[in-house]
Image (tube, rainbow, N blue to C red; front, top):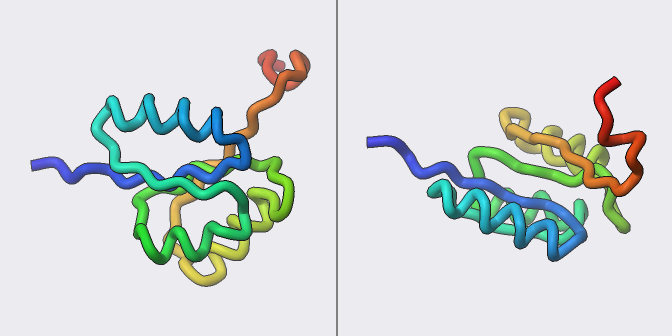
Length: 94
């Protein structure tokens, strides 16, 4: 029997969180969300995710600072950093 993956989505854009949630829950994951980097530690400790999918650019506490703070307390935490951008120069392969 395969364990059901647990994913914590951290993004200040509710639409992005909803889209990711729809995709990964359709694949069988259990999902929790938080809307800014300042919520990550509390959400992580309450939910115990296998992976944190974290936006880099957020209003209050950005994803880099949040990941550093999270890994300081939970060094084994797995964080995937993402960025959503409408700037065409950031979406083209170089």
